[in-house]
Image (tube, rainbow, N blue to C red; front, side):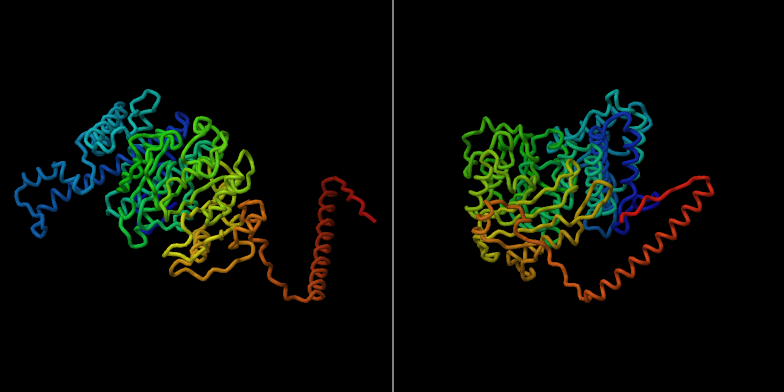
Length: 539
């Protein structure tokens, strides 16, 4: 964290107010759990951001129009005032229109008032009325008696110090980092079962870097808080594209997480079709006719209660009937169902999905492999997720392994073993470094023969391009460790006799040091009237 109290970001370093906001969470923790605080805090951050964007546009209308050098110069002050309160001026600039009662200065002025909860609820309601796209999305329960109003006012004061209007580009970056920081912290604080809405950034980065969704339809049928979409849009912008080059489609079954995703995407200016409501992708597919160019997803691991008993005859199960007690292979076939003829999919699953033979899963996997759909498998290290310490894997499927943009890899699958990667960021959580993300994605692009990629070569212990026939000899198991082999160890150039002489000399020195320490310890113990008899040495 950056030191000091400035809220401004000047060098791209971590932002001090992130820690301040989390400190406020600690103060409220005795009064609400992390999942509850999440909605209290993120709702206020959203409100502050759109208010800052509104005020920036309002100042432009008031004072930009009074500058004779401006192409929008308006000499008459009443006309400028009218323009500053013209709703259409804001909508045309993709800025949410806020009535006076919803502007942050109104809320800040009431921060110390016992009515602050009602003031915030009224602001949220006014914003939804004026902006139909946000209807039913914003949290509106700040006035409830169980929410400590003194602490709520303190949270308003802290958020008041965050400036989102320094520039359009920086604003979205600041807000995005706050969201990412909080989503990660909330997932960690809530523990197992609490972080299902959050996919670790490094995992998302691997998926996006490998699929490279430059243009086309991007789909996530279990989109959580929308992280896959945010990273995809960021990728497009970083590679010279524009927001809007990709069409975003998503679906989320959890109501509160669906609302969080809509807020998360709204503040980035990402126009996404998440359906008119939250809904279960298996039982109520909101995009039944969608054929996506890219699918990026992190479905719930090993979901047992997915309603499979009521979906025995379904058009999606082209490769076999998924078991009713585990949704992994239902998700895989759901993804395939929504892929375009040249579409590619990348998704996270539990490691068991690569080798399971339970309840027809092995037969489904065999059918997928024989249909030449499995493009690449990546084994990741454990401790990446907040919800589970178990290692996970990434599946990459391709409808067409030979098209105009890539080398002909029909009948082959790339295996990448990245289990040895990652660094600990705390006692129990690990993440992949940028260099490791690059190594994984570069290997894949080299194998595919993508433009500007390095030439591909198998690397013992890391990657192997494998024919379908060889996979069949392994019982259609897709675990990378079975194929990549052991890492080659560099040959030791030191002659054996010289090495033994060096090591025995070192061992003699260590024995001598041990005897010296033993003597000192015995002397000290005698001085304390303690006697220590060392154990007898074996003959």
